[in-house]
Image 1: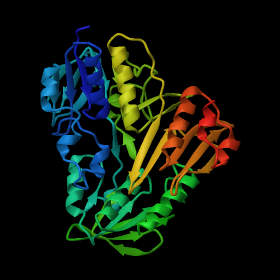
Image 2 (image 1 turned 135 degrees about the vertical axis):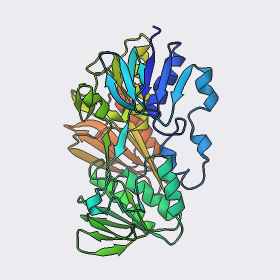
Image 3 (image 1 turned 60 degrees about the horizontal axis):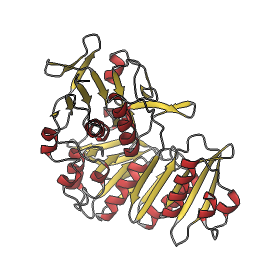
Image 4 (image 1 turned 90 degrees about the vertical axis):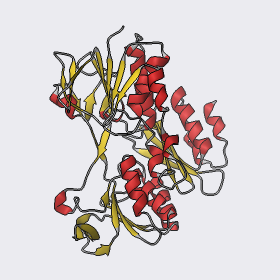
Length: 405
């Protein structure tokens, strides 16, 4: 096949798709379209090692600039697609030009939810934590002794809190739900992570939302909270979730649910158009999910590349995630959607533990806190389909290797 592959989105999924197509020996023309001015780069280290000054931006690039020319991959930066013309098989650019395609891949990702202007979201000093520009702006704000309010107790908010404390800031984190990590983790995991943050002097206020941000001369200076209290702040980080970038698909008449609807081959309702990564809603255990992870972005993109290059292997998701906070590594294997039972297991050393998730008696996921053995064992159990004996899990002195027999 020689027709052009156009990839909309220059993040993890978009780059992985292009690279895998080339690895598979497919020489068709490829164009990647990215809205940022930077070559494709890793996002997770942005708000960790990069923000802490421990990693230069060049080290975040997937490949140096010459890789694209060497592999006949055209990359268009600082530009974006306004519309898809499915009948003409063209994407219409923001400058009015058109680019034809034989195959189109949407790797448009997801965008953080913003605070509305009505509660002060448009004030200076209110930040998201998504891309290099966000990280650079935050780096200039993070100075010892300053006060930051973090809105949202998910992984993004907790990771931001850890970095801010490392930089010597005073940190208050608010979560309007009953507890932190309510949407993504069990109470046991939340309890462990809350205790870790409080040991590092983060003030965590649950069941507390934002009423409004207060500004002075256009810059945020305070926050009025839902419990009636007001706290002084120097800046604010917003981590209240993301929404899939599905506008192009929706306006083009493609199937859209919680993201762009794809089949197990990453195809949309138009067989010439694929969707991969955070923007895609894919089949999962008889239902549909959207996975926000680097692992899924890469694995699904590489599976789609195989289809584009002429293969016929469906994508079988094997989710895993991670979160680094202070010297704590939280590793997650599986997907805990629909769990109805959990089991907390103490780890083999101080500060380590794991939380095991079950649905109708079947093991579906594990959260491993500084416990690599639990993570590796859980991952292997999920890959092999073995259901672990709960009596062994409950016995912290038992060797987890027994579960794999």
